[in-house]
Image (cartoon, rainbow, N blue to C red):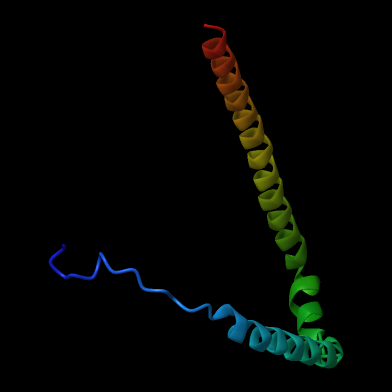
Length: 102
């Protein structure tokens, strides 16, 4: 027995997902309805600040260029990572086949 005397005791934990699941679904429905009704009100907001700051000074082009470069870098990294993982998988499969043939 351990010094606390508690590690040898198995306590049954009641399943609490049945009580919280309907409450979470209800909250999700309420939040989606609020979003559905509030989204049109927000979409009609005045966007003059965007035209005055970003479009007028040409900064929007810089923002778009930076976002494009970042996304292209992430995509290139994922492609290279996929190739490396594919090569490792092939090496593991060949090693596994060689061990089975022996």
